[in-house]
Amino acid sequence: MIRVTNLYKSFRSQQVLKGVNLEFATGKITTIVGTSGCGKTVLLKHLNALFLPDSGEVSINGVDITQLRQDDLYEIRSKFGVLFQGAALLDSMTVFDNVAFPLREKTKTSESDVKKKVDERLEQVGLGAMGGKFPAELSGGMKKRAGLARALIMDPEIVLFDEPTTGLDPVLATSIHQLIARTHAAFGFTGVVVSHTIPQVFEISDYVAMLAGGVIEEISPPAVFSKSQNPVVQQFIHGRTEGPIHVL
Amino acid sequence: MISFLGRVGRFAQEQIAGMGRMFSFFMSSIFLAFRPPAKIYLIIYHIKTIGVDSLSVVALSGFFTGMVMGFQGYYSLRKFNAESWLGSVTALGLLRELGPVLSAFMVTGRTGSAMAAELGTMRATEQLDALDSMAINPIKYLVSPRIIASLIAMPLLTAIFDVVGIFGSYLVGVTLLGVSSGSFFAGMENAIVFHDVYSGFIKSISFGLIITWICCYKGFHAPPMATGVSQATTESVVLSFVFILVWDYFLTSIML
Image 1 (tube, one colour):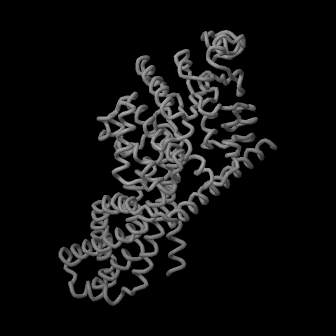
Image 2 (cartoon, rainbow over the protein chains, first blue to last red):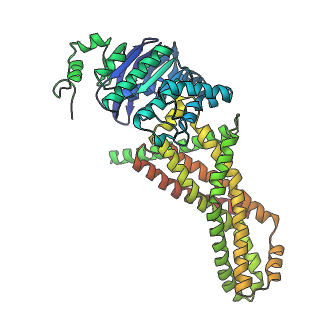
Image 3 (cartoon, rainbow over the protein chains, first blue to last red):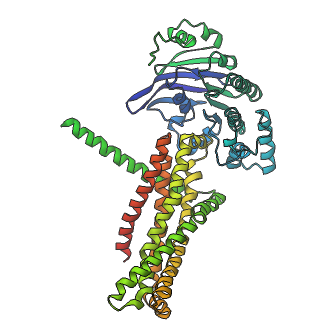
């Protein structure tokens, strides 16, 4: 169980998170939606302590990770897989080596087992023949798939997806959503997705949380969320420029 | 007046905090460099990028520096009828000062800037965050092997710079200007003591440390955008040059 309690974060004079309270159900996919620049990625990066809050708590199975020493934090982080916005593949390595990287660095798995497991993950994300390519030779969608294969290689309990479909065409976006749903069904991880691809992302979500003005405005299952009477949610879902969300 | 003092105070606070971060980065890199498991394959790879890949530019600059020293030394020494001291003057200058400093400048320009740009790009494309999120310490993985590699590669590059420089000076002094070959080498043999070699060796090691520390720090903390990477690259080179010269002064005053 991931629990965020009263989380505050600011960068210089700009306060981004103003008291976020949120719980992520174990084994379910929760999607955080909100306008661009509202702090979704900042919130996501607090979940594995890539960002530390000004105040507040982020607890994983009852352990407040904001107070941990680095070695203990790394222990907790090995439960996580992260798919970054731009996939964040190490560009000096091939796709195969990128996916194998956590296994080689963090475990004593034999090279034959590494190959078997990496090939299996690459097959699962539809990149079976792409292992020898470098990230620069891949399309945006392929990079996301390779990033997902790397995020899943250590069989993580929790997977964070930072805007997994941003910059992709609708067909590719749907295929990435299907891939997330398929891998979730196969591995049963707790998923946290940051996205503003609505309503498509609702199809893979068990819960949808709306972040606006630095706080969680609403969290509910997608069917309830889309019928919410909350004016902030309504404005966001219908893409209106007038309403409580200030548009520049 | 109060707001002016406030701004000065904030500026001073930011500078002190920045220095603290740099020092903490340095200590972490050193500590993690000697914490097992050692990344031998990465150390070897970075010895290649710092050492082997800088070899041609270091050798070339050493050769021409030696030749210039041959001309300038001959011109100066001839005024005192002391041309036969050309070998010793050149060798002392190269071993104690020009070898370590100029080869450090070459490595800063050739490899240090590349380190800052590479790490800055990794910051901008979230590759450093990716390492951190995989529970792999990016300082241990990216900086510590470079630190060890620079400690090994820099003295070797400096030694090559010295030897090639002396050869350049020999070519100009003996072959072009007619200084006796015997007096060139005999003067060198008489004037050079182990301390001269040793002080150059200590300087080159510490310059290697300075280059890797500053360039990696600047790359690590580059603002995540194109201009941030270019700014970090420029700052890393300029700051390395300044640190090398300041540190050189202190070491020279201690080891003279």
